[in-house]
Length: 493
Image (cartoon, rainbow, N blue to C red; front, side, top):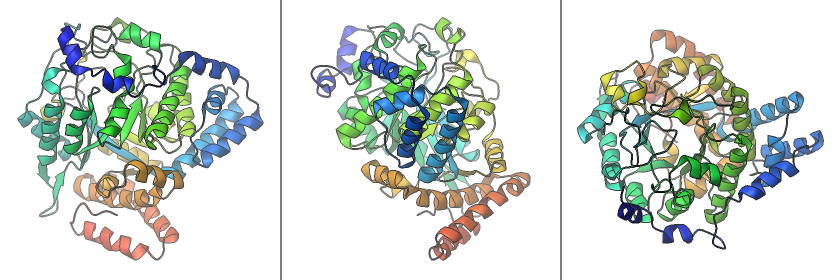
């Protein structure tokens, strides 16, 4: 990669403008000192902090550090109970589902832990054409998906113009439903891509993006530099760290943050730092992140780093999710199919809000009908290979409804509006009702008779709860529910 390409991609003034006193907002030493200073909180203090979480307050650094220090099993159980209550207060009794679509495995970066690294000679490279993207979208729709996370490597062939065109192509895919005249389609596309300039982010925004995700990988400056060579685009930590500021300035008001746990040993630092990032976005724009993602490093083609044994355990993962749920209570939490079914089930009970299922991360894997994982054809290996239907039934057995809702983004409930609605609990009302409507759609269009029998008690319980909570509004809900039963689609509040 030439120096000119680096200079073309990275706009130095679009980093510096977001710095304060010439530096970024992550102070490694201050974060570590805060964790050390709050290493032995007493029970009374932890319980006071939990009351702030229940009030849907964004916790400040000392409180986050205190929660990270809890080791007492009794207190951890109390934290888990409060996390479950917080999740229900904000997001009600639902888990939103989606599926990733990996569109290209070409990448100019040489990250030491990634199967897509330009240094990996074993990796099989492919970029889908627009026709292949449409076929992939149609295959995903046939599986019942309505939310797609489009994933791109960082490469000149998959820049902002390509991303915008591919979003248009995905939205154009239509598949007939079971009911006569019913048509299924992708209703919302989130994007996981490299940081971009404000002008390029405007292009992506205009193409109809949902959430824009950029994961920091690690906030530790030294660890970041060790994993990302300095002569690559990704080697510029500041360009990545300020991406969401640029996204807000480009008009994108729905963003997702994430770190790659296991990349460096101090997981508590990265939890605390991601909370710092959330507070910084609130300071800058009044809008915090819509989601936190918590991927963990897994085996990857050609990477000694990724294939080495990590000291980041399942229990560490659980505690990281727990503290994030309590620290930024309004934020959605995504745990992907990288993790095992058992670990994801544990996280569901402490406030997980989004899960993918039926996931393929090889390029073109849905359309090809691939079932086996091949490490040289994908970025990493998955831990949970359940189908979408299997996951929905498993959640139903726990009394949890799966939601395909995308209403908020088409009703303008994004940005500051959604933040206020989430913090006050109002969004949970819409979420509950729209979850029922989309659940009914999925049952009628995709579920087997056995799955319908397993899921009907959940939908009956949710309708009963709506009737009790909103008796005057219940007839309006049932009017739309009955229209869906008769074959209409995409009705929402």
